Image (cartoon, rainbow, N blue to C red; front, side, top):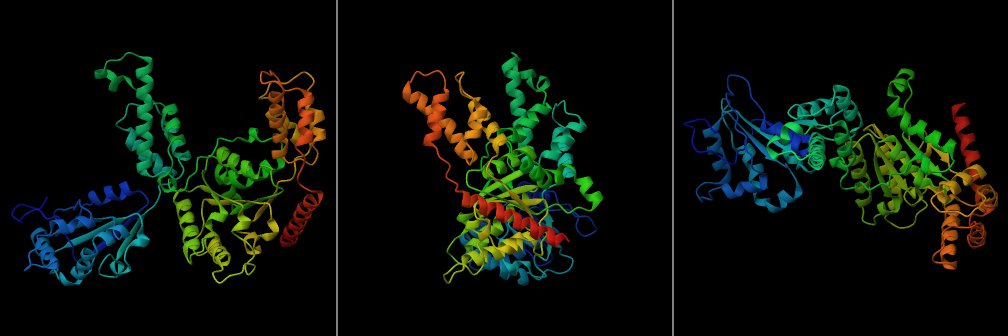
Length: 524
């Protein structure tokens, strides 16, 4: 509130004395920072915080023809100095469009206020989209100081959780809170508050369901547990990912038959840098930036990426690469730039590019005046190892056509780990058959080892299709059938034939051999 005797309370303040932009991914956080600013010193004895937003200011302007908006602002500032004005959502486009006239007056008011030196006024702008702030507002003498409030680190998340839980009845130890903070990747302060609120509701529901406790004593009886927090954490997505995050099925490594070498390679590339960070630092190892999964269609490349996200516990953004080839000039690059911005905000994070060959074809190979592919590749390269370092974000790409991908993406520091996902061998096929047939009642004559030997040349998807087709044949024969018999599987083998030719397999194997030789020559 304004000091006594200084005039009426003002709802719109502005000046040219000093300006600060507070840029934060957490809207609630920069609101709290702005609202709790305290000014120390002889001249600033109190603070005045404006709680409105930019587009609401003109409603409070009296509209007197003899008093322009800048003059009205100046009169209010002289009443209230020393003071502080907070502008919420500084520079957001929709505010500018709604209050275009207000923005013009705002820019005029800055140099025209001309307050004397002892009339101190601070302008504090808050935004979670700093790139949308008008450049003229960021000139020296206006909003000339910029402070970024980033996503909290693991230690920061621990302190936030301790602060939130200090007023909550809970059974969590310091070790429990630290463990939760370590796995809450990319969550902001507001996200963590939502996790605690959700956990409290779960604790309340559990208590009400198990006990007949009077409402008056619920607050003393209900206790938040580690299990409540863990469940709430699994259902809370980082704010930065809500526009792009997809619901990923909970696929585990155990759901994918065989492929032990592929699983181990991905664990080394993706999981180890997070789980054994100290070891990487001790030996001076730089974690890989990207992984390329390639191989014949139907060999579980996408499923492997989903299992990788589940097992690693990292945030996961899955996109179809072909959706980023937009014909309008600049839109594809903007989409790629926004994607990486969201991934950085939610780091550590995995970006999964499915069908990357549709996005990253050889430059110069596409026809047309727009050259969308060339521009998208240039933007990808900029994001991966440009001036701004890509930290705690790893790219996982999948393709059936590795020969079509631009070689600039394949060099070390980009998609530097190339993983071949081949057709399943006999042991892998046996595991796939066991995983799928174990869910179905089987006749005594079913021989999984014999089936595994007969499915040579089948992809993983085709082996699964054999199991599904056999069950359908059993139902077709008798809708009341109680099991799948060996003859049904034999008939399914005749209906489901391998579609990957030996020539295609030879191509993938030769590409793998050549990529390994190139990698060896670079190391030597």
